[in-house]
Length: 176
Image (cartoon, rainbow, N blue to C red; front, side, top):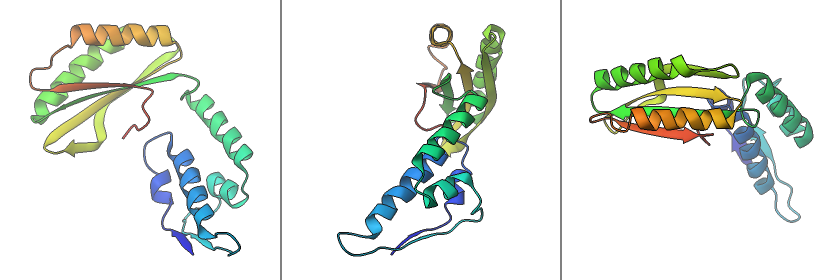
């Protein structure tokens, strides 16, 4: 017997990979429920049994899940239809972190072109880790050459943020 408790909490996280991760997790644990000749049982707790992710899992329909996920990513301009650049500034002094991220946003937003957009600045989903405050900007770009240009400019202009650190993650595996 395997139970997946409150899988909705994962699907509600602000990361475009979450549906894929829920599908993968439930499929993997379901495979472990029964071994050899023994039949297994899986119980999935959800508040949204009509979710297309849950329906595809129950039907073991990976192709439909994949097609729906790809269509959603295309509509929202997420990879593989664009590049994402997650820029995080972290530091111990919250006001300084906010000031630096706003300054970075102002400079980047002047250079944004068609086919690109910028989200933020906003507190990172995990806003404070080990006494460090974290704010981020996410850039979506359909042109990798343009993404590289943006990254070069960021690195030139902001090599050092006094006490703050800058993290640049291209096509991040986790947005959190």
